[in-house]
Figure: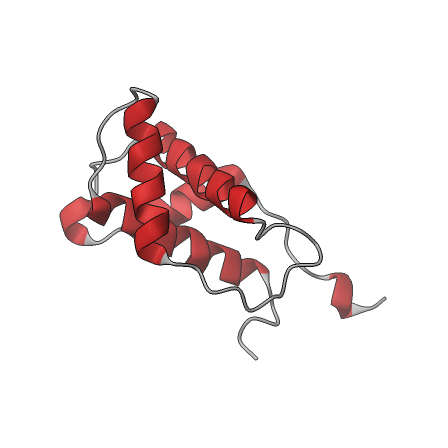
Length: 109
């Protein structure tokens, strides 16, 4: 058996737990699991809109984090969900990226 197929699969519940446990201390407890799931959905919606999730997209995509944060805040507000701060959104983005890195054993190389 090859170890190349040893890539872990994305698990939404694990992602939320990971993000919650890696939140900066001043933000811990401010976002529910539902909040985090919703924000992650908006993050991936942004990636989809920008074409970052296409198979033929370059692996070294540069994401404008300020544009992403503004996109998430604007869409959450227009969906009448609730208002999130840029710090909360940035913490979820950072947590999601860190979680995804744990799934790719080649990310450290």
